[in-house]
Length: 251
Image 1 (cartoon, rainbow, N blue to C red):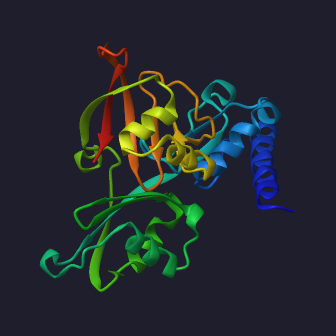
Image 2: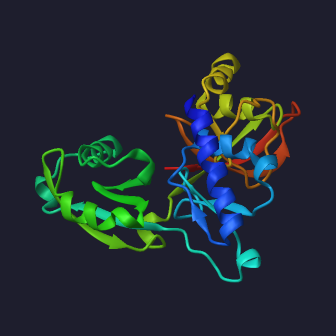
Protein backbone atom coordinates (compact mmCIF):
# COMPACT_ATOMS: atom_id res chain seq x y z
CA UNK A 1 0.00 0.00 0.00
CA UNK A 2 1.39 3.41 -0.97
CA UNK A 3 1.72 6.40 1.37
CA UNK A 4 -1.01 8.14 -0.62
CA UNK A 5 -3.38 5.21 -0.14
CA UNK A 6 -2.62 5.12 3.58
CA UNK A 7 -3.34 8.85 3.88
CA UNK A 8 -6.59 8.55 1.95
CA UNK A 9 -7.67 5.69 4.19
CA UNK A 10 -6.85 7.65 7.33
CA UNK A 11 -8.77 10.72 6.15
CA UNK A 12 -11.74 8.61 5.06
CA UNK A 13 -11.84 6.98 8.52
CA UNK A 14 -11.84 10.40 10.22
CA UNK A 15 -14.69 11.57 7.99
CA UNK A 16 -16.75 8.43 8.75
CA UNK A 17 -16.16 8.67 12.49
CA UNK A 18 -17.24 12.32 12.54
CA UNK A 19 -20.39 11.49 10.58
CA UNK A 20 -21.33 8.33 12.52
CA UNK A 21 -20.55 9.62 16.03
CA UNK A 22 -21.50 13.30 15.59
CA UNK A 23 -18.15 14.46 16.91
CA UNK A 24 -15.42 16.60 15.43
CA UNK A 25 -12.40 14.68 14.24
CA UNK A 26 -9.05 16.19 13.34
CA UNK A 27 -6.08 15.05 11.32
CA UNK A 28 -2.49 15.84 12.17
CA UNK A 29 -0.81 18.60 10.14
CA UNK A 30 -0.88 17.98 6.40
CA UNK A 31 1.70 19.23 3.92
CA UNK A 32 0.73 21.05 0.73
CA UNK A 33 1.01 17.79 -1.21
CA UNK A 34 -1.22 16.01 1.31
CA UNK A 35 -3.76 18.84 1.21
CA UNK A 36 -3.90 18.37 -2.57
CA UNK A 37 -4.72 14.69 -1.98
CA UNK A 38 -7.51 15.78 0.38
CA UNK A 39 -8.92 17.95 -2.42
CA UNK A 40 -8.92 14.92 -4.72
CA UNK A 41 -11.08 13.08 -2.18
CA UNK A 42 -13.77 15.77 -2.09
CA UNK A 43 -16.50 13.76 -3.85
CA UNK A 44 -15.87 10.70 -1.66
CA UNK A 45 -16.20 12.60 1.64
CA UNK A 46 -18.72 15.26 0.63
CA UNK A 47 -21.30 13.75 3.02
CA UNK A 48 -19.55 15.57 5.90
CA UNK A 49 -18.43 19.19 6.10
CA UNK A 50 -14.69 19.70 6.44
CA UNK A 51 -12.31 22.63 6.54
CA UNK A 52 -8.58 23.19 6.99
CA UNK A 53 -6.60 25.56 9.18
CA UNK A 54 -3.00 25.78 10.32
CA UNK A 55 -3.06 28.34 13.12
CA UNK A 56 -3.34 31.51 11.06
CA UNK A 57 -4.72 32.47 7.68
CA UNK A 58 -1.34 32.14 5.91
CA UNK A 59 -0.26 28.75 7.26
CA UNK A 60 0.97 26.28 4.65
CA UNK A 61 0.81 23.16 6.81
CA UNK A 62 -2.79 22.67 7.97
CA UNK A 63 -5.08 20.36 9.92
CA UNK A 64 -8.36 19.15 8.44
CA UNK A 65 -11.38 19.19 10.75
CA UNK A 66 -14.43 17.07 9.90
CA UNK A 67 -17.78 18.37 11.13
CA UNK A 68 -19.51 21.72 11.61
CA UNK A 69 -21.61 23.60 14.14
CA UNK A 70 -24.57 23.30 11.79
CA UNK A 71 -24.27 19.51 11.81
CA UNK A 72 -23.39 18.96 15.46
CA UNK A 73 -24.98 21.92 17.23
CA UNK A 74 -21.78 23.15 18.86
CA UNK A 75 -18.57 24.78 17.58
CA UNK A 76 -15.32 22.92 17.18
CA UNK A 77 -11.82 24.17 17.99
CA UNK A 78 -8.71 23.24 16.08
CA UNK A 79 -6.22 21.61 18.50
CA UNK A 80 -3.38 23.99 17.61
CA UNK A 81 -1.02 25.85 19.92
CA UNK A 82 1.88 28.23 19.25
CA UNK A 83 5.16 28.03 21.15
CA UNK A 84 7.67 30.88 21.14
CA UNK A 85 11.22 29.55 21.30
CA UNK A 86 13.91 32.18 21.92
CA UNK A 87 17.57 32.26 23.03
CA UNK A 88 18.19 32.58 26.75
CA UNK A 89 20.97 35.06 25.97
CA UNK A 90 20.66 36.72 22.58
CA UNK A 91 24.28 37.93 22.47
CA UNK A 92 25.55 34.34 22.72
CA UNK A 93 23.05 32.90 20.23
CA UNK A 94 23.97 31.14 17.00
CA UNK A 95 22.34 32.40 13.82
CA UNK A 96 19.35 30.08 13.90
CA UNK A 97 17.20 29.14 10.93
CA UNK A 98 14.18 26.97 10.15
CA UNK A 99 16.29 23.84 9.69
CA UNK A 100 17.96 24.31 13.08
CA UNK A 101 14.66 24.51 14.97
CA UNK A 102 13.07 21.66 13.01
CA UNK A 103 16.15 19.49 13.56
CA UNK A 104 16.04 20.11 17.30
CA UNK A 105 12.38 19.09 17.40
CA UNK A 106 13.02 15.97 15.31
CA UNK A 107 15.85 15.08 17.72
CA UNK A 108 13.24 14.97 20.49
CA UNK A 109 11.42 12.23 18.57
CA UNK A 110 8.56 14.44 17.42
CA UNK A 111 6.99 13.38 14.12
CA UNK A 112 6.76 16.02 11.39
CA UNK A 113 2.98 15.75 11.14
CA UNK A 114 2.64 16.91 14.74
CA UNK A 115 4.16 20.25 13.73
CA UNK A 116 2.73 22.98 11.56
CA UNK A 117 4.58 25.99 10.21
CA UNK A 118 7.72 27.22 11.96
CA UNK A 119 8.13 30.98 11.55
CA UNK A 120 11.48 32.60 12.29
CA UNK A 121 11.88 36.19 13.49
CA UNK A 122 15.43 37.24 14.45
CA UNK A 123 16.61 33.95 16.01
CA UNK A 124 13.22 33.37 17.62
CA UNK A 125 10.91 30.64 16.34
CA UNK A 126 7.13 30.51 16.53
CA UNK A 127 6.19 26.84 16.31
CA UNK A 128 2.65 25.81 15.44
CA UNK A 129 1.98 22.37 16.88
CA UNK A 130 -0.67 20.00 18.18
CA UNK A 131 -1.93 20.92 21.64
CA UNK A 132 -1.08 17.50 23.03
CA UNK A 133 2.69 17.94 22.57
CA UNK A 134 2.98 21.48 23.98
CA UNK A 135 4.06 20.42 27.47
CA UNK A 136 6.60 17.97 26.09
CA UNK A 137 8.22 20.59 23.84
CA UNK A 138 8.29 23.22 26.58
CA UNK A 139 9.95 20.78 28.99
CA UNK A 140 12.39 19.09 26.64
CA UNK A 141 13.44 21.70 24.07
CA UNK A 142 16.27 23.44 25.89
CA UNK A 143 18.89 23.79 23.15
CA UNK A 144 18.87 24.55 19.44
CA UNK A 145 22.22 24.03 17.74
CA UNK A 146 24.62 25.32 20.46
CA UNK A 147 22.17 27.89 21.82
CA UNK A 148 20.27 27.47 25.09
CA UNK A 149 16.62 28.40 24.56
CA UNK A 150 13.42 28.97 26.51
CA UNK A 151 9.89 28.02 25.44
CA UNK A 152 6.60 29.70 26.20
CA UNK A 153 3.09 29.31 24.84
CA UNK A 154 1.91 32.40 23.00
CA UNK A 155 -0.94 33.72 20.85
CA UNK A 156 -1.16 33.12 17.10
CA UNK A 157 -2.36 36.70 16.59
CA UNK A 158 0.56 38.57 18.12
CA UNK A 159 2.18 41.36 16.04
CA UNK A 160 5.42 39.37 15.62
CA UNK A 161 3.55 36.93 13.38
CA UNK A 162 2.17 39.64 11.11
CA UNK A 163 4.00 39.25 7.78
CA UNK A 164 6.12 42.02 6.30
CA UNK A 165 5.11 42.73 2.70
CA UNK A 166 6.90 44.64 -0.05
CA UNK A 167 5.05 46.13 -3.03
CA UNK A 168 6.28 45.29 -6.51
CA UNK A 169 4.98 46.30 -9.93
CA UNK A 170 6.07 45.10 -13.38
CA UNK A 171 4.61 44.49 -16.85
CA UNK A 172 3.62 41.05 -18.17
CA UNK A 173 2.12 39.80 -21.41
CA UNK A 174 -0.78 38.09 -19.59
CA UNK A 175 -1.94 37.05 -16.14
CA UNK A 176 -0.75 33.47 -16.64
CA UNK A 177 0.94 32.19 -13.52
CA UNK A 178 4.03 30.90 -15.34
CA UNK A 179 4.64 34.28 -16.98
CA UNK A 180 4.26 36.15 -13.73
CA UNK A 181 6.68 33.77 -12.00
CA UNK A 182 9.21 34.23 -14.82
CA UNK A 183 8.99 38.01 -14.43
CA UNK A 184 9.15 37.88 -10.62
CA UNK A 185 12.19 35.63 -10.51
CA UNK A 186 13.78 37.13 -13.63
CA UNK A 187 14.12 33.69 -15.18
CA UNK A 188 13.22 32.13 -18.53
CA UNK A 189 9.78 30.69 -19.26
CA UNK A 190 11.44 27.24 -19.51
CA UNK A 191 12.85 27.60 -16.00
CA UNK A 192 9.47 28.81 -14.73
CA UNK A 193 7.84 25.69 -16.21
CA UNK A 194 10.35 23.50 -14.39
CA UNK A 195 8.99 24.76 -11.05
CA UNK A 196 5.58 23.34 -11.99
CA UNK A 197 7.08 20.07 -13.21
CA UNK A 198 8.96 19.68 -9.92
CA UNK A 199 5.81 20.41 -7.86
CA UNK A 200 7.36 23.55 -6.33
CA UNK A 201 4.46 25.93 -7.05
CA UNK A 202 1.63 26.43 -4.57
CA UNK A 203 -1.50 28.40 -5.33
CA UNK A 204 -3.71 29.27 -2.37
CA UNK A 205 -2.03 26.60 -0.27
CA UNK A 206 -2.24 23.77 -2.80
CA UNK A 207 0.38 22.39 -5.17
CA UNK A 208 -0.55 23.18 -8.75
CA UNK A 209 0.75 21.97 -12.08
CA UNK A 210 -1.48 24.33 -14.04
CA UNK A 211 1.09 26.77 -15.32
CA UNK A 212 -1.41 28.50 -17.64
CA UNK A 213 -3.93 29.36 -14.91
CA UNK A 214 -4.86 33.06 -14.79
CA UNK A 215 -4.38 34.74 -11.44
CA UNK A 216 -7.27 36.49 -9.69
CA UNK A 217 -7.04 39.37 -7.25
CA UNK A 218 -6.17 38.06 -3.79
CA UNK A 219 -4.54 34.82 -4.98
CA UNK A 220 -1.58 33.76 -2.85
CA UNK A 221 1.14 31.78 -4.58
CA UNK A 222 4.61 30.61 -3.70
CA UNK A 223 7.57 28.90 -5.30
CA UNK A 224 9.45 26.65 -2.90
CA UNK A 225 12.83 28.14 -2.17
CA UNK A 226 11.96 31.44 -3.88
CA UNK A 227 9.29 33.11 -1.75
CA UNK A 228 5.59 33.76 -1.30
CA UNK A 229 3.49 36.43 -3.03
CA UNK A 230 0.01 37.96 -3.15
CA UNK A 231 -1.47 38.99 -6.49
CA UNK A 232 -3.02 42.41 -5.87
CA UNK A 233 -4.45 43.03 -9.35
CA UNK A 234 -3.58 45.07 -12.40
CA UNK A 235 -3.07 48.75 -13.13
CA UNK A 236 -2.79 50.07 -16.67
CA UNK A 237 -0.93 48.99 -19.76
CA UNK A 238 2.41 49.76 -21.38
CA UNK A 239 2.67 51.30 -24.85
CA UNK A 240 3.32 47.82 -26.20
CA UNK A 241 0.13 46.47 -24.65
CA UNK A 242 1.61 44.66 -21.66
CA UNK A 243 -0.28 44.65 -18.38
CA UNK A 244 1.13 46.15 -15.19
CA UNK A 245 0.59 43.78 -12.28
CA UNK A 246 0.78 44.61 -8.58
CA UNK A 247 2.36 42.02 -6.31
CA UNK A 248 3.07 41.93 -2.58
CA UNK A 249 6.16 39.90 -1.70
CA UNK A 250 6.60 38.36 1.75
CA UNK A 251 9.97 39.44 3.15
